[in-house]
Length: 116
Length: 113
Image (cartoon, rainbow over all chains, first blue to last red; front, side):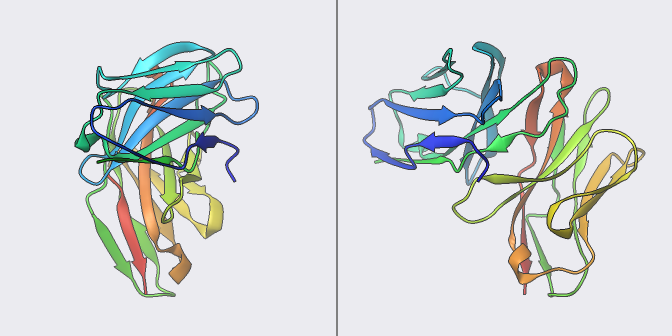
């Protein structure tokens, strides 16, 4: 158990809909990352938050957004869903000292999203 | 921009034989390199990391990785493979200029039979 909790584990929804994925980082971790894993694209970095602030953006679509709350949990919002958004979405967390940053990230078990 | 390449989609090894999963990287500045493993229907699990120091890094489950700066490689190795090592392996590099974002390779499926 990595200590990172993601809910729900599975989600099935229709095209055009909006969903919210939730992530609770490990206790003490300030940084949260979101990744999308699909067969054709592999593991793609979406976005990173550090202590409530957005710090880095990757290949995140405009239809997707995220935030990190004061209690450090994070939510990834996916809207106007398309069939191609079906994937496994991972959240990871790390301590990420600002100066160092060589700590490993710990991954949750993911949310499998199926868009039908 | 940083990048990681895993040139093999799949590696097949007989149980008891040594295994190598290859990874090359491209990054400006000092590379922070990681290996993760993903078992079916599970999240990624951290195996080992290279920050600085010895070029041979030891990690979990008997795995080790060899850092080679001149070849920009960070190959994952194990002296004797187990069937239970069969999984998807990801190499990753951290870019310190981007608040420690991890960039992953496409992954290599290891099959031990």
